[in-house]
Length: 460
Image (tube, rainbow, N blue to C red; front, side, top):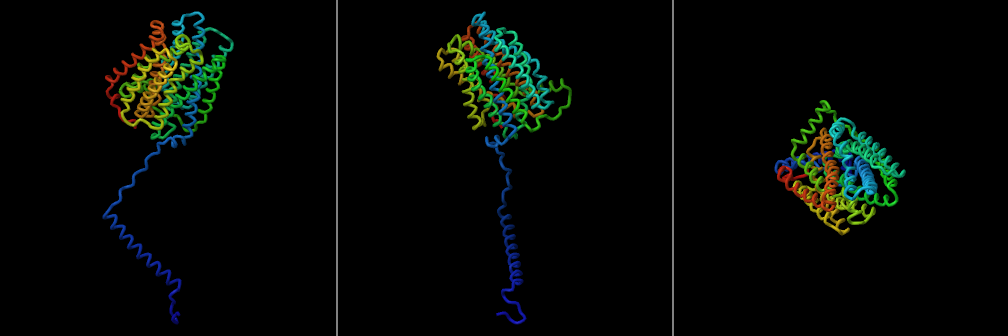
């Protein structure tokens, strides 16, 4: 019972005051305890979270997915076009020429594409470091569409002349000169830097996947007609153009001071003085020039293994099958250590597999050796591209990609010329064996000339 004139024990005002006083004392005691705890056992400073470099994080990059899709369908179209072009030129040449002479004519396609690429590549690299890279890629795809439609017209009209095909090949080489540095420099702009090694692996996978499906599909289309193959390539180029147009992120690099000539000289000086960059791309150049047995696949399919256009498509797809298997592994387990040694090992195995292919008379062994060749090439290409992209600043990537691109194209196109010329002298088997042995010798020579590249360790 409450006393008269007093306040009872359950008065809400008194209970609230008592509660506030108790909470204040508890907070004071807790604060003293925290101070003593911090003085006796200080907590370590918080570390920044590790960046997410998983495949899932890469797949969240919408613009990169559009870029990847355009790269895939574009490669698919290029492979279908290459299969149809090589087969058509060889078939036309065999009407009036020997096997060796016809093989040489096939190799001349590569030379017709390489000459404009070589002449324009420095200008193309400087352009990629000044202009919007997406727009450059879209314009070059438009030129490819026109080129392949001309080939389509020649095929359906039954025009059996080689000179218009070589003229188209020149225009295609000119478009490739601008496409390579633009896309090579644009890719790293579409992903955060921690995702770059994984993105490079997936870029290579897009190319290899297109190289698997493209030759096989090209061989199937060739069974019906060359015109159908060229028409299919045109459709794929259009799809690639639409995917590139869907990229929203800005792809124009920061403005670079200096004249066009000064920027070209700056890019060349950077490549020459950076021994990792120069050593890696020159190794690819000379090894693939000598080991370019794939240029002789029409000859092996028709006159060595006798497997026809369908088998030709299988041979063309075999290197990409091996490369894709290696690429899938690298996309999930990127190389972390011993990068230089791994790259040299890949080039050496590439040469050895070329020798086996040249000596093989069995279809299954030829397919297997081409698959090993492709897997080894994928390994060396992955290491080389990652090293070059990581050590090159964005403002220089267009020019460095142009130089790298011309080295790659030189290795492919001049490799076709070398293989065709040696095949004329030694036959197709002798040419493949000679080239494979030469690639192995180049590997040992470059390991001695570029010790910094051989000792390159981490791809980070």
